[in-house]
Amino acid sequence: MKYLFLLIIPIVELVALDLDTFLTKELEIAKVFSKTNLRYLKDGKNIIKTEVTSPKKSFQKISEKIILFHKKQCSSVVSTIGQYENYSNFFDFVNKSEYKNNHIYLKIKFFLLAYEFPINVKIDRLSSAKAYPFTFNTGFLDGLQGILNIKEFNNRCLIHFSMDWEGRYTGMSNFILENFLYTIAKYGMRKMLLITGHGRTY
Image (cartoon, rainbow, N blue to C red; front, side, top):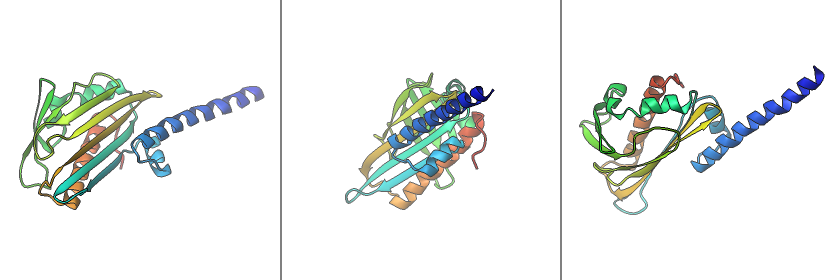
């Protein structure tokens, strides 16, 4: 029994080390590594980082990253969030959702804005754990590019969403635009976690 106990300890430490190494690498890729964020991921909390800057006059630059270590396997998560047509049923700020010819067509009405605006996103249908590049093809963020990276580890699903955009002034100040995008991400993730069985993170 003594030798069995001594054998179990290194195995447990190895599993913990492998998980920490995996999550640390993903946080470093997202450029949001900190010990606090590592703990958040292990605890099932999502991390959102949104930045809006002005690299030059009359221009704005957006960078947003969302990362989460979901409690369920990727097959379960993908089967739900891949239902683009049902986003109007999943999210209360989506008034209309369609998916045609590898494009998601959404109409968004969020409480921070007084008007509804359309979004056209080109992205493949989610089918498995892999990388899904996407682009925005309409609206004030036309030309925005990003990637949704989905990875399986220890029967849990890592979701890493990243998008970047640079263009002419949108009509919203950096502060307002940054808070608008962050708030949509926050509320969207909160709802997504509930409908995919992850549960509340707050």
